[in-house]
Length: 121
Image (tube, rainbow, N blue to C red):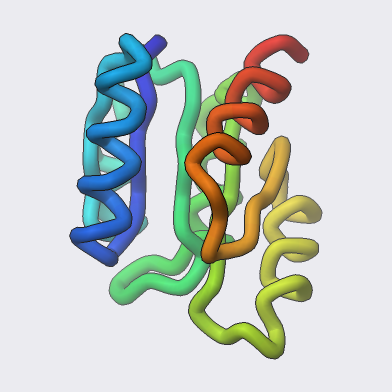
């Protein structure tokens, strides 16, 4: 499976990439929504994991643009930037078209379980 990870936090992105590579997936990384959309365009991507709060182009707008260009791609939104409003960001991500959401901090096992569930639908 080809996965695009969009997250401005280098450590989060590297950890996700390493975990997914070890699970046998192909990984493409992007540091923000603009870069993610450029890397998505013209490629076959099975799953996008995107952060919500990012510079340049935040996750909600990125999700909306991904949905416009490819209604079939699976999207998991992750967020932990503003702990007080975290759940509302994740609720908005679902409304914008994310297939599932996950609050930071999360266990990698929980993320892998969400990926399995989303990809089976």
